[in-house]
Image (cartoon, rainbow, N blue to C red; front, side):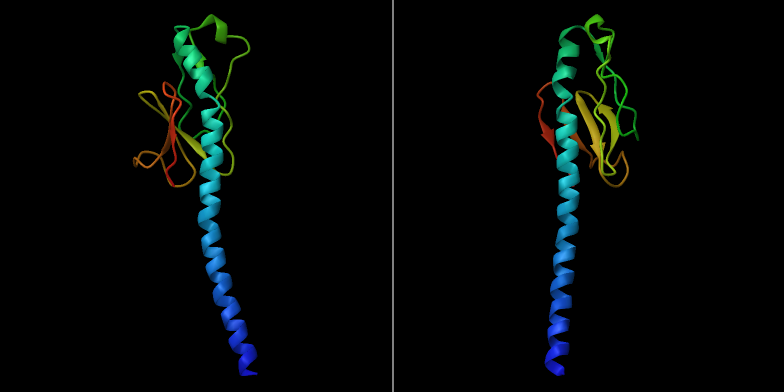
Length: 126
């Protein structure tokens, strides 16, 4: 009887460790998916600037939509829009050449993930 209880206790401890590790992996996967979505908009954003257009920032708190470019005839119809972020991720707006977004917490604490539309480089923050 004691051996069975000891075995169940060990299984419970191992299960807790596995589930705790998996939650961190889920967060990383969410951020990675968001980076891929936002990065897909960097080429249209660079093209917009090269055609003398103006980058329209995604609305803070939104999950996507809204035109990427304004003021350029080539981008007027149909408008190319910011990609939709999934899994609880959302945009935080723009800062200089970067598009800011998060998958947890709130905007404005300096811990947002971002993509730079001039260099097309992105940085993940968890």
